Length: 92
Image (cartoon, rainbow, N blue to C red; front, side, top):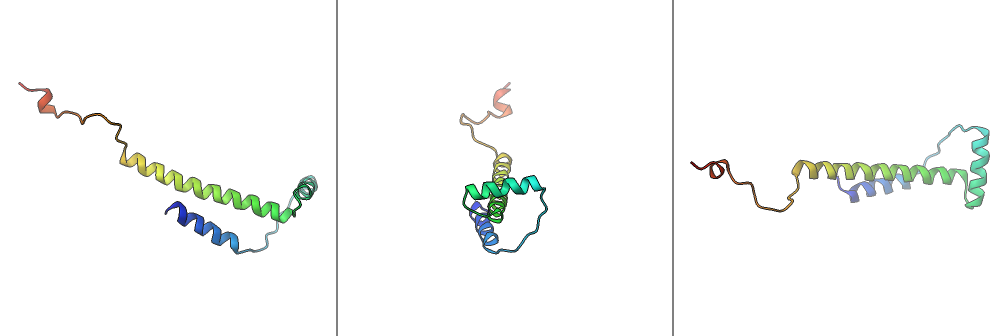
């Protein structure tokens, strides 16, 4: 799966909205209300944005990990000449 494919999936999922109920302690709710007011938004939008960011970061991390694994399995050419064969090193 390519980065573009993952981003299209994420964009599709983000466009579909559903309600989510969470439980938070009073202090967290109070602080979230203050933060939302400072950012001129709602607590729900703050939570949605942060969850979306986390999901996007995780999807990118998975794609990058897959690319890195593929590169490690394939190997890297670091320059230089190929190793000589055994016969040429041990000519008798």
